[in-house]
Image (tube, rainbow, N blue to C red; front, side, top):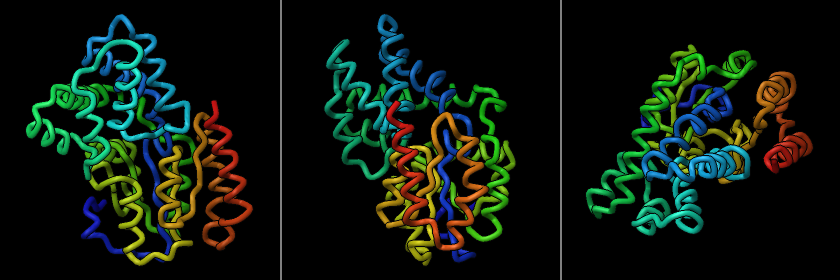
Length: 281
């Protein structure tokens, strides 16, 4: 599995980009409810508001149209809510500015910004991110399994398309999870938060020489669709809490429509309507 787009060469005429958390792997709930949310409460000393904070974190990251948002963007949204409704968050403006302007939403980029500014909120955000990574690493591998149908779908894709993991998560962590589940054997390229935003990653994939109608993004969040839209690629949604049914749909109909050139239009519109309706929870 290649991790540098500069070393990547297309092998087939079609490419399928797949999100990981909550799309291919059943990791979304466990990472957010047992790791990201609780680590936020711990790092900012919000124990007295714990239930409210965890509930709000779940809404922003799992049960709304901001599902799948980058961890630092999700953190910034949460801290704004906390600052407005619970307790003052010192240095919040500096963290928000970094989130909105940085070229790379990663631990490494945040550490550089903290060293440059000395902003305590950035320091806490960095410690929160690292603590969350440690917590995720402690989660049993059995809690990071693929959804039913994913491996069958990958085998089907491999016959006609190059396969790219496209995630807003930590690349090292995602690579480990795919290797544990022996899914890495199907993948040509891993693009993660260290590679840039999903939109930037999709633009890089397009430059590899694929025709627009030969690029498909599979994801569970609006950010995945936005990434596909930015290069006029196709989008197949995995519906939250209906993931296995979604993969069955892809195996039975989606892949055939993609290869046959009948994906765009009525079929894509039908899947998009189901996707948006499902997010309005």
